[in-house]
Image (cartoon, rainbow, N blue to C red; front, side):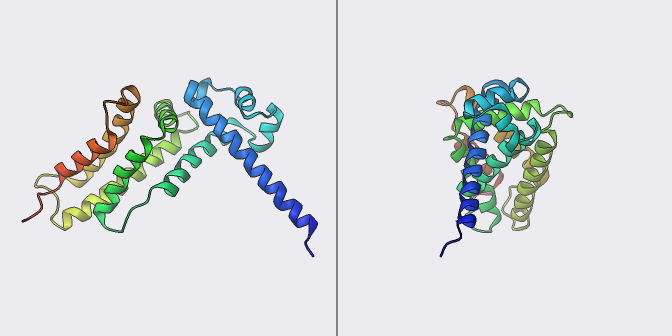
Length: 204
C-alpha cells in the first residue's frame, strides 16, 4: 500500500523543481536581453508566467536568482562536455570541445559575455563568481600545460602559466567575435590551432 502523503510530497517537490527551472530559464532570457542591471524581477516573473510574489517564494532576492542562472550554466557544461580521459592533452581538448558545444548555445554565450563584462565592477553580485571562475580555469589549463611541459611536449619558449592565461583570454575573446559574426568565426577551430602552436611537432 502506497503512502499517499509521501507521494504527494514527491509530486510537490517535482512541481516546485519544475517551477524553479521555469523561472531560471526566464531569468536567463531577460539577462541576455537587457543585462543583469536592466532586468526587473517583475519582467522575469511575467515571462515565467508567475506572479511577482510567487517568484520571490522560490528566489527571495535578485542575487539568489542570478546565482541559480550561473550554476545552471556550469551544470549544463558538466553534463554535456567532459574530458575523454585523464591525460593533460584531453584536459585542454575538453575546453576546445566546450567551445564547439557553446557554438550551439547562442543565448547562453550571449548571457555569459554580458554578465562577465558587467561583473568587472566589484559591487556586482556576480563579481565573485567570475573571479573564481577565471582563477579556476586558468589553474586548470596551467596544470594541464605544466604536465605537457614535463613530458617534453611543449615547444621551446612556451611558459605554461602565461600560455594558460592567453588560452582563457582567447576563449572569451572568441565568444565576443562569434556573437558579432557567427558565420565568420569558428571558436573551436581557432582554439585548436592555438593549442597546436604550443605543442612540438610529433616525432616521425
